Length: 258
Image (tube, rainbow, N blue to C red; front, side, top):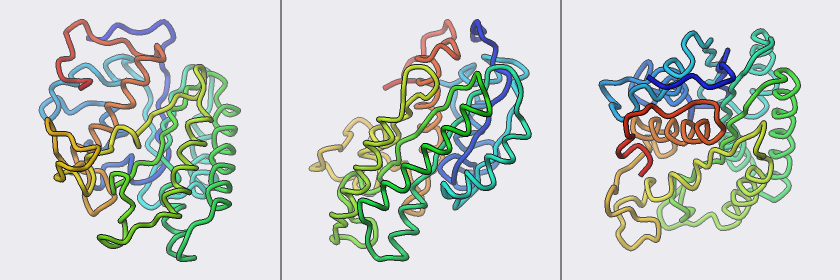
């Protein structure tokens, strides 16, 4: 079992969109939020005892994310519901939001402009402000937005590159990285971790090709599959270890952090 850290974690709150939840990952308990709370040891033996329920027995768990949620939804609905779980004590919050905002704007306008990215970042800043105000002893895992095209930009149609949109996308992820710090807001860089496991995962000429693991981590083009959900959890667990919120079990992790 993991050694309990000095500051006991009282609650875990998962906010955001379908990147976090069970819906596309294979059923109940298989989404990233669920796996971080309680691992499925039979499916992911490398993560045995590497979950919050093992590191902090009795931790309260609140999954408030849903499919299709935007930053507006986090601000207007999820955060008010999360406020019902306010109180003293250590709180971990995971936030996956922003991708749907960009997709909806792209669908509505037919293109993205830098100001679209700037407005999105302002909403993410408001979310972070609300979280840190609501929970004085909180740790937020703030996620970059992953790219299902592996950096190519052919999201809507093969061979058609969304070059302007990719520049806005990079602007947003750069700004997200700049919002993190070493204390209250930790970076979970899903964008970096997922490169090479999207729509071009089988292309050996692609700069992000992984010959040792050329596997897809997406389903329906943009949603994390079962492997993808576990990889999101992997990034979160690593961030929590680095933050000192959880401790690694004594047994060697093997291929836990490839």
